[in-house]
Length: 588
Image (cartoon, rainbow, N blue to C red; front, side):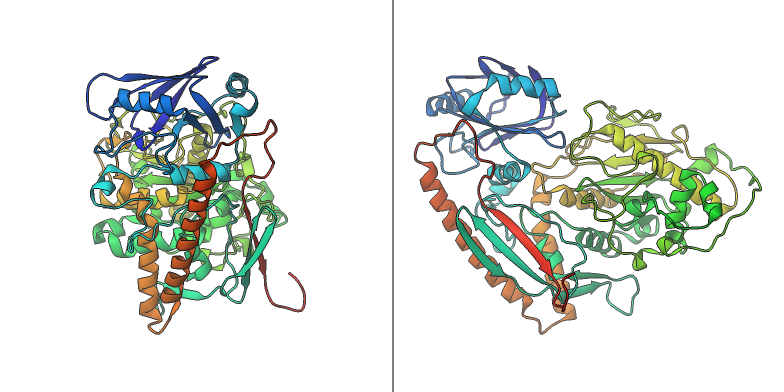
């Protein structure tokens, strides 16, 4: 078996920015990387079966990861080959108590096929290979993530919380639950289940922290304390945080020129665009094309803006609990290469908006993959299954993610930016849906016909910086938008598709704490007498101390010989159960 990796970590040494090939046989692993000390020649590392003590793997298609631990003697040989020393801050030591130093991590890209997974399970049978779920895999990734060189030089370490960063050491594994639009009078109970012990810890009520922009300005986004907690390490960002920060970026952090040329849709837009609304509309609606029905769902969202006068249309998308981004660039240029045609008269339908067509401010939460709402989609636009088919999805579009740059002078295009680079077929389908939306929007706004198609609006999937865990997709989306608006492309210039080094990694590592600081600052501006920041800081200090003590105790336990049973337990470590209820005579 030979597979490529977008990243390989050997202890605290991380190599990225290219393809790294790993060969797996019945004798073990073999791969080649450059040593810590810069040189032109790569070093080949052999990990024989006698060197390997365990292999842990999460083999889901969405993000695959393998963790390998070796004997101490093998670790010494690897340090010598890669010229690792404590002085150059890179080390691999299987017996280290520092999670960043004791594993070899492979991040395969693209994901392995079912046959390749079977081969991997066969090569390392029994207790040597242990499959783990996404929660455990993400926990290990976060704890073992090497700090970037720039952060180390500045004295910032992922394992040492700094007052400004508020980076918290990862706790033992727990389940993540995304809570959206929690009522202000709701109470959240958390139960941390650890083996046979059950501890119930009620948290504070979900209080309103701020409205941005504040009244009397319109279109404000309300941020509650439950939304604020989504910014904790290893938590998934919810729609409120995404929409809040995107609105803040556009209003506060970009130039006036870029602001006037940019339109950012709410995170609710794409789910509403692709949602099938059963039993809505009139008999005339049934005669509409799927694209026209989709446009009807959101046609009032642009009643105060002409998006064809904008150069950049930003569309945050969440599918299968994963955030990524689509940006439509220069949509107005399509009319230059493909002149609009006169309208073809046809029987009109009832144009009175239904309740499902209202603007973003009157909408409820977006459709989510949990199946609690009607998420039926037209033409295969539904959220992807957690484990899509291995075969690539059929598409008529000829999207091209390969070149480092393309000449798009005087033309429009769509970019899809994803921090988990996979399933390009679904991305092409999203581009088709956006083109169809633009076609219908042009007809509604301009009263003429203009078809947006791959020939006049190409689509590209650039190589972008990739997340190193399972929970930072929302953080990367926000950084993509911020970096894009700092230096947006200009009409007539080549489009850069090789963006692997677009921004330094430490900008993403500090993004959560930076948004926390921003929210607290705005909160105190609107509620000067609030004690929430102080109470939150005290809770964080208590939590950090408790987790450090827990990790110290776990390190002592792990220092003893560990025997993995033939049949691993179904539940590994603690879980966290979130129970949400609203005080009322009846349970709802």
